[in-house]
Length: 627
Image 1 (cartoon, rainbow, N blue to C red):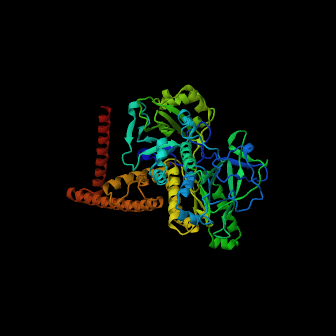
Image 2 (cartoon, rainbow, N blue to C red; image 1 turned 90 degrees about the vertical axis):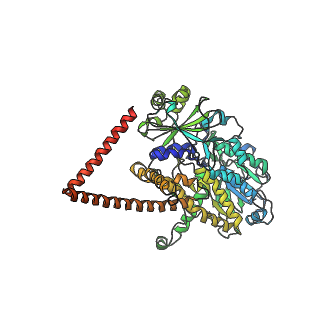
Image 3 (spheres, rainbow, N blue to C red; image 1 turned 60 degrees about the vertical axis):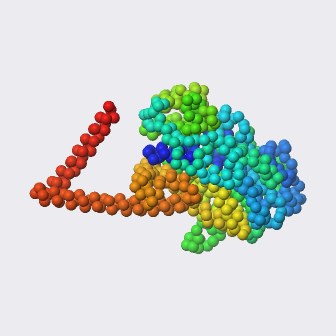
């Protein structure tokens, strides 16, 4: 999700401080149904197959919601013809998150001439189905979004996400359900009084960032579908979809899918089973398949297995010398792990309700970030810690946690009641997602494409997850509108988005390296970019954070332009050092010749003078600060 009000902090602090943008994660992962502001990114709902796979589809051609309960299901006749409306769809979207729902809305809005190129039957009524493994979230009007703020994962929508939502005419509804964030108030380590916080407003941003719970955004888009497109789009919750065939036997062949009902185990929404019961085996087909199921990656994982099987069939020598994987999910090892605990906080009325509040502890042990859940001062805060910190453990001592807040965050500690502090101490910390990208191909056959977190997963520091996923939908719409058929469209989407997705992940990971490597790849480039851009703005681009805000600039272009900047910066610095050395050498020789002293003695004297001047300046600065 691009809330760059957090990025000002990154200009001044180490890579650990960049974790403070966690609440702005733009990712489309499933929300954890527990008392966490942000869902555990690895809590993927598992379908545990305890019996032979049973496949289910609704008998109604216009079902808008499929219950997860088996007692209310209707079973279609297994003798239905393959062309039956209940078995064939114009398009199927796997994943009911923000990107998946917006993709379905996009398909529903396509001009007839474009949609006819998708459907195998010309001028056939549109039939679009969405399948998601989780139950539907509460509607956006539900009071739990305000009264139980720590339950929901917050998204920050920047210009990339807002532009996509505006394009598909859903922004007004989203804006009404969200709250603005116009800047941040930051406390440096050791600064703990309320008046010590420094307010920085986001005056250079293209749009005003809007914040809302992920589930609330899903509820808004679901409401749009039910209000405007219920005759076109089916919403099916509690189902897993597994590809059986991607139609590789011909570009015009439909995709075949197995749809399995997931029944929660003991009321647990994180695990489910497929029970034989009275469900009738069935297979559905679709002319177009969009995989937008986030970190679950059901479609992407099937694509990866397909490519592995293809390569396995090749002769080993040919595979080694002449063939490379055409699709894989690149998973990076997390060498800079952070975990978090969520904390609900209600701020007093004299605190602004449209700011991101941020504070860091001494020794970079922890960071606290808080974003508004509503306009009434209800905030969701995250305490970011290292995995081995005692405060990250489940059942840690509430007194120790309270003492930590009293010592490091006294401006926040009185706002957190003992019962809330006890709840925070009791629960275990949640992990951040790892860096992953899929490619180099983002399609399979001629009728399947993946987008969103299924393609690019980043840590939530820079608000690029959900925003980039929504932007993917807009780029796919461009491809469908500008090409003669679906195979050409999915190929164009790959051409346009694969390199961007890889660049997004590699750029983000480069700014998340630990220790000295993180300083060299994150802090130092920010300082250099700031200096050189101020000196020559027509030659040097702003920092990557500034470029993330540029309209129409992709991540691959940002990566290439930053490489050019690094080369020019190295050239300028190297030339400057060389000229300075020659100047010093000339000065030493001139003084030595004029005074009759040796070059070494003059050089030593100049060095001592420089050191002495530096010491005097430091003493004078400390004296002024003390006064």
